[in-house]
Each structure stands twice: as C-alpha cells, then as structure tokens.
Image (cartoon, rainbow, N blue to C red; front, side, top):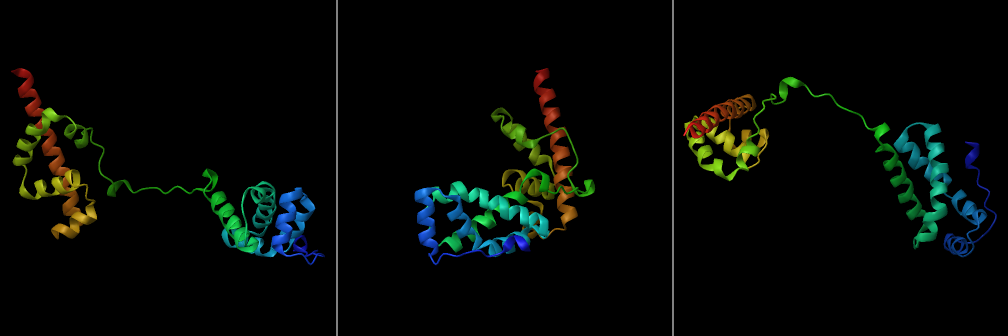
Length: 195
C-alpha cells in the first residue's frame, strides 16, 4: 500500500487547509489535506468494492471529485464530509448499469400473459355497469379476490392474510375470475354491438 504514505509536513488544521484551498485552488494544498485521510477513504472503498485494485482506483477518482466539490461546499468537519463523499461515490459506482445484476423470474409463479387488462376496462366509464353485472356472475371467492386485487390494489400476500386462503387458491381465484370476467364482458360487448 505504498500509495497511502503520509507525507503531511504542515501543522495546519483541516479547516485551515480547506480555507487555503478554497482561496487559492492550489492542488498541493488539497493533496496534503487528502493525504491525511487516504487510508480512511481506501477503507471505505474496500468495504464496498471488496477488491483492492478497484478501491485504489476509487481513491484516485474521489480525489478528482474533490477538486471541484470542496470549492462548492461549506465544510466544517472535513473528515466526516470526506467519509460521506467516499461512501456516495462507491454507492453511485455500484448502481451504474454495468454493475447492476439481473434476476430471472420463474415463469410458473408469474401471472399468465392474457391479452385482457382489467385496468383498461375499468377506465372506460361506459363499461362500469357491464363490469358490475359480470362481477355478479363470478363465484363469491372469485369476486372477493378480484375486488381485493384490482379494485383495492392488494397483492397476493395481502389477500392471503385478509382471506385466510392459500396463496395458490388466491392466484387461482384471480386468474379464473379474470378469465370469466373477460368472457362475460366479451359476450356483453357482442350483445351491445348486435343491437
């Protein structure tokens, strides 16, 4: 870790060095100040990145950020402020698209891909009466599940808690209820168009 050598020769406080840097823009002053806390910054980066080389690169990138950030911000406690800057830098790096991980979903636990989208039907005011009539044709279990899921916006787990039903039963009631609603609504649409 040769790059972390402490070369501080001045007895000036952090606050005095911050003030001098803001007044002069002298990178040597900033370098001296940063040198005092490079081990801290390296430790923060290593904690997040887990790889020494990546952490070392981040230490250098953070110094480059300080060139402009320190001149823009009022800093009373340089050590604490720098710790937060280092942490934010690491988090932002980890959030970049190349670092984001994707997760595959098991298709069996996802809802099936039907072309009907109940929300689109609900948005059409003229279909509310038809929808209420069709809801009445469903079993009471399907009606309850459909109302909770679509009208009250509850998730499967919330419906399970509220009704005391099994998760698979809730899913079945919603899917079958949705399919039966679609059939009923299509029949109603067809009957209206024939009039």
